[in-house]
Image 1: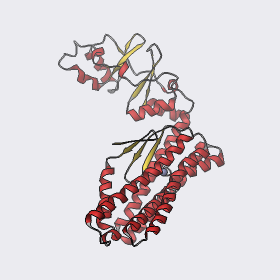
Image 2: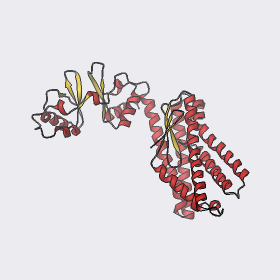
Image 3: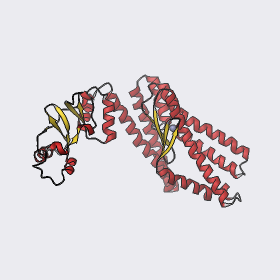
Image 4: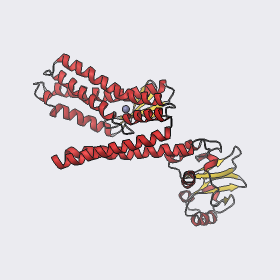
Amino acid sequence: MRLGKIYGIEIIVNSSWLFIFALVVWALASGFVPFRTSGLSPAARGTLAVVTALLFFGSVLAHELAHSLLARSRGVPVSSITLFIFGGVSHLEAEPSNAPGEAWIAFVGPLTSLILAGVFFAAGRGAGPQHPVGAGLEYLATANLMLGVFNLLPASPLDGGRVLHALLWRWTGDRLRATRVAGLIGRIFAWVIIGIGISTTLATGLAGGLWLMFVGWYLLQAGAAETMGAEVTHVLGGLHASDLMLPPAAIIQADATVEGAYEEVVRFGGRALPVMLGERLLGLLSMRDLERLGETPRDRAYATSIMTKLEALERAAPNDDAVAVVRRLAQGGYHQVPVVDSADRLLGLVTRESVLRRIAAAR
Ligand SMILES: [Zn+2]
């Protein structure tokens, strides 16, 4: 769901967000003790709860905007910010090119949360903690303090993990080694959090510790994905699409009937095969394309009439950056990206297998 743009950055909220928003408003209006005992009318309490919840989500947005705006001022393009349940993600379109840049972009988010905590705390003190508005402001101060402190934990993808990575990068001068060491420290931290969760569960019952175990588990998963991504980027850095491609397992001639073409597709394990006119790639034929056949008998229709045509295919030029091609392959959920030159001649196919083979060969 798109909320709009701030400074040209698209703000997207996850659909779970509306539900959580309603839950927070409800919890504040009916469960938050200072509101309940304030003697306010239900309507006034409800209004106070909505305003408090809006300020809380505004705080999360401010945290992400701080990351995004600093990233952009340092030359890293930012497309959008997605807000989830209790946090957000800024989508940077590239990685910061130097360690100080990475450190500051990561640190400015928690810093914003901690500054907001201070501002809300001071304002709450001004209103007086007995006053319901003062209590609401102190609640916001606590929420921002937790947001700031939690994000400073040194486990990637949390901001603290990125700050740690930047410091290690600066210190060792080796980005990949920094990623590995930061990943290891992040895993240790995640296991410590899981350990605390387990002991809390043993001491006080499931509810308290389950949340911590979940957080630890999430950090393990996300951290592993980050380390993996960095390793792949390192191995493929400086390579091109032509270094990743393999020749097709088989080809289908343009004058083949659907019947003949499908014998080939089935013979090669159901994978998509290139349909060729001489050296020129016309399209790809996969099992899915068979749906386009309709009522026509298979021996009367040509492969070219049901294939996915070249114009509709995700394809790459031989000099395209290898990391970018793999990213397209993964994000688009494609099984293969054909590599063609400017005259549409097929040079090879980049497939998941060919990428894995290239990575394995580099180790
Ligand atoms: Zn952050």
